[in-house]
Image (cartoon, rainbow, N blue to C red; front, side, top):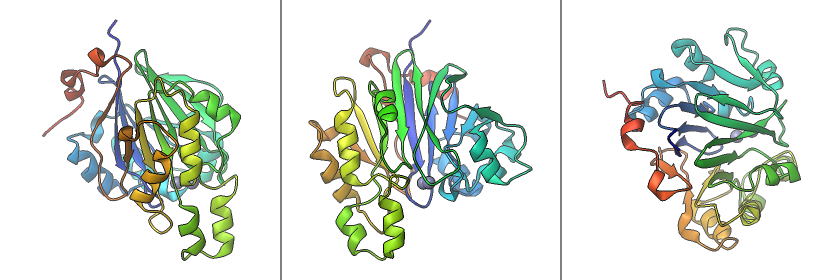
Length: 276
Ligand SMILES: [Zn+2]
Ligand SMILES: [Zn+2]
């Protein structure tokens, strides 16, 4: 059996919309759908990906920056959905169709991708995040959490790639436009990770394996890409592996593989793409 890796691309990341593509070459998944369907279609087209090829959508929680286009997407394309019971109930969308309800402590597979969910402390009904793995790659998304719990740090410990939340710079948040109550909510253990917390979390992950660090979910009001990058870079040894994801544009595909000789073959990946 071929040991495939993973490829990851962000369709956009930030406080006003989040969506990420994860591909094994054989299986293509969408993590969250926080843009209107038209925007999702347009952003996927920039990567030459057709939504008909999606094997599943996973949803982390019910906040609009993660589910804005979800209902229209699953209805139009009949894409299977994986979601916790609490998030499903909170969508209040009776027409969302059949769903795969998940337990945030039980792993499952979609195609050839193994998925380990983990609960996140956040001001949502039953939020979670995921580790995606193939025999040759492990990628974790860690956004929308107020604090990394011990369970989270151990679950993501040996990942090759991380998408980690770097939501705010403490000084910019303090001096920014948000009222004290909203600032407190963001800083709380059920809010978001700031730049310093992101750096500290990355530092705690096994650096012998970690090759790719994507900083995401930046606030456009309380953070700036260079501030986030510089802060997190202070915590890690090799800052060249850091990429700050953007809210308004699609990223490149990031290859994740434990063995450089076994990157996801482009030919396999292109079989997921339609140019028509
Ligand atoms: Zn969010
Ligand atoms: Zn949220």
